[in-house]
Length: 148
Image 1 (tube, rainbow, N blue to C red):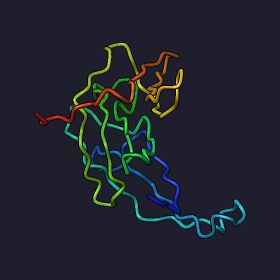
Image 2 (tube, one colour):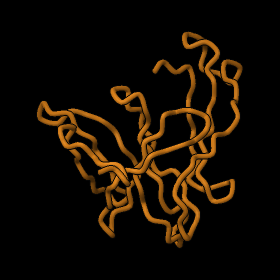
Image 3 (cartoon, rainbow, N blue to C red):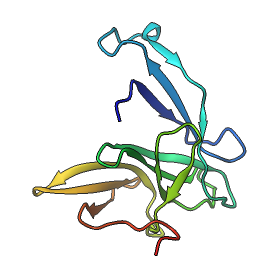
């Protein structure tokens, strides 16, 4: 997946309680890092499962091996009761996503996700707002909701 764009996200939902991706096209990848080399694209509203409160994007990571992005959603403000969830998004503008069947510890506030190598093994590392983290080893397949 060769992208020539950046993707900004919004923690606070701006449209019917659904998280937004704000894509920005880079005109010339070798060009100057100035606003003149960037072009705003139409926002993408992600299709997440309904929750009692608004959800925002807490983390976004490009998964080149999967040809997709991993997206952590969850409460957009401190008082929110929206649960945290991990989704896979293809990067397509329709915003369709598939939720992984994972739960976060009650006190965990996932804030970001990245792929890395730990002790020579590939892993996903989910970082927490309070300084904690969770490691998911690459050899462990995360199931999708509804998958049998």
